[in-house]
Image (cartoon, rainbow over all chains, first blue to last red; front, top):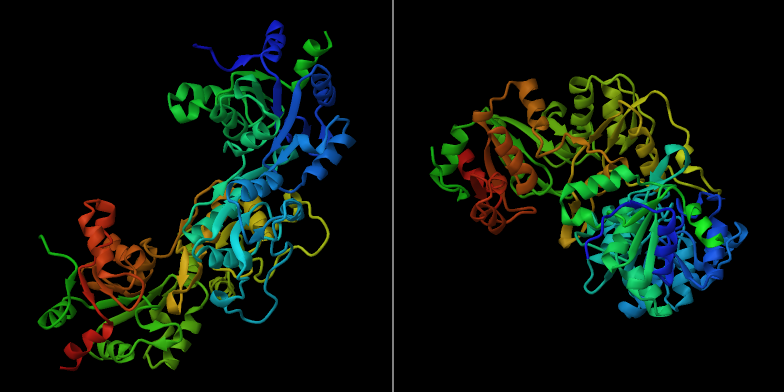
Length: 306
Length: 306
């Protein structure tokens, strides 16, 4: 079936699309909230979708929050959400190590408290989070103490990233059989006012360059996050819609997994970006063209209230 | 003229090669020393070359020492060397900013004390070196204080590299007109016993990924280090020999600048590596094939003593 892509979603088309799916995956930042503020109308949309019998899930590459932290934030913003509907990379990374890698051993963790908590929740030990830098005296970098039980290096967002952590990760990764997993490859975290800060992708690339190895990442656009949702809730790809603000992560995840895709313009990507991908003629870039777009997910409200 | 490459240098060929050059550039680590020990015979080779009227220079990508620190180390190891014969990336980076960029403004420096000293020596101000990490309370990363006089970000080896430094570099680099210079792209620093630690290339790549910009690097294989030597001492490329242990930096620098090239096997690269480049048929890799190789630069001794 040939479908014209990147269609503006409005009028009767909204109900038609919603009727064609049972489950909807939402990215978070730039989609249902921006920073600490809900996108106007977003809580009503989510809550009405659930009242209308849709299954709603949240998939985010941000690794700085646990499922519980996300559920608490969402509840405070007026979303009717439970922990088990939230799939962040902190949680998915722990699931990947547990269910796919069947890791037996400790994790050397470059990451956040949230990542530590999600690893502990599935029974995986880790080496701890927080500062690890030098204080004064010269260091024998190549012979820093290593934990012999470590069998995996995991890299997520870490505001305490340091040369010492980079070095320790490299030393572990040159040991035989050490797994190497990253939460995601986002190079920047966009903030309000056009500002941004370095994303996990920068840290991961430094470790990959040092270790001369490529990490397996669990975040979007890798299909693992959808696999997680699908296996726990029996979601069928052809009855599922992915809603996001980024073409290179959200929309590409949707394409990679055979989902319907909807771009919302309250975040990073624009319709012009999508059209440039469409016109490129490059098959890889075509996967970043959404089926539909809306100005905001609030545009779904009339069809849900009607 | 077609010349067979990667020839073992011995017998009469040694004198023939030495007679064909006036200047010889030596890499340091893996060539004239390993760690804190001189390669056996290396001091005699260097000293005899100078007694025989050759000009000898030292070109190293290592940015952790100033010219003075190098000269002191060499003198202690028995080399007859003066500061002005040493071209490290700390010094060359300062020269690049001064003479090529004609920088007017401060440098935001990710680097060592040696880099700070070399910048100060040419009259360039910088923001300081040492630890810059977070201590406890949450940080507004996108709004960290910036110095309005900074007009360049410079990245060299920095054992205090941190997420804070990565973030500050990115914030400066998104300002209009901010220069971006790296000392070198070596991804690993090889150490004794097959060990290694992350090199400047890892840090530079993290900053480039965050800033979405490519840095100009001054280190080998970029021709700038040879330009420095040549302009200060009137060295002619066709009367100059480059001696090094790495094909991708030392030998490629020589090829890039039209120098004769000699690989020594006391460091990183092997003859098999060179032959693989030669057989590749790839023009880019052919530049990494040396004209000659020796087991050690001590192999030059007989021709110098005879």
